[in-house]
Length: 126
Image: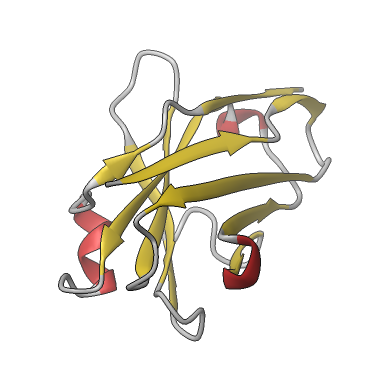
């Protein structure tokens, strides 16, 4: 089992930056991929970005490409989502999730991950 906990959400203004963190604990020794997702109020959850276990491959949703950056520090068992030039439409609960390396990391684009956090709320005011 792997547990993931997100942090770093808050209230910011449009145009600001914010960095979210996702800490994994438990049976992380064999490596794991990480995905970030968001669920705006009243809408379905959507894929944001994913990074493979070694950190050398990433995929982004078109809506955030060029403004959001996913990264990880395996020594700290932590993944990050740097969000720049935030728009009011980015208001959502942001969640991270982890999966073992038996799945291709690209499967995160369709939500195929095993362990999910509870999320952290990001509110962007205009």
